[in-house]
Image (cartoon, rainbow, N blue to C red; front, top):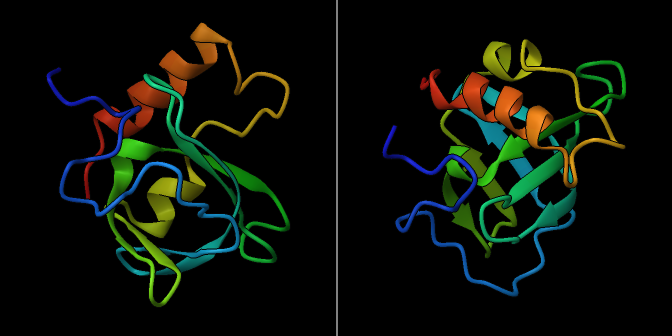
Length: 116
């Protein structure tokens, strides 16, 4: 696969060094929550989204490659996946999302093959 799911798309509007914490996250079919954490690490850029009551207070890990557009004026991030695709993703594992290659492969494989 040529797409790097762990890097921001050049057309997303992402600017390195910009804090995305607190930005609302919009799936193709509605809001899914707010950014709790984000990483710009090369080869591992991602968002951790607090879904609030939508998935009973859980967090989801979204690789940066799922981000289609960032609107800094409205503090919204648009991802090119549906709410159902995000809800069905591998469960976010707080202790594994940093530095666990197997977990990254699992999440990256899930999102890499499932565009909206």
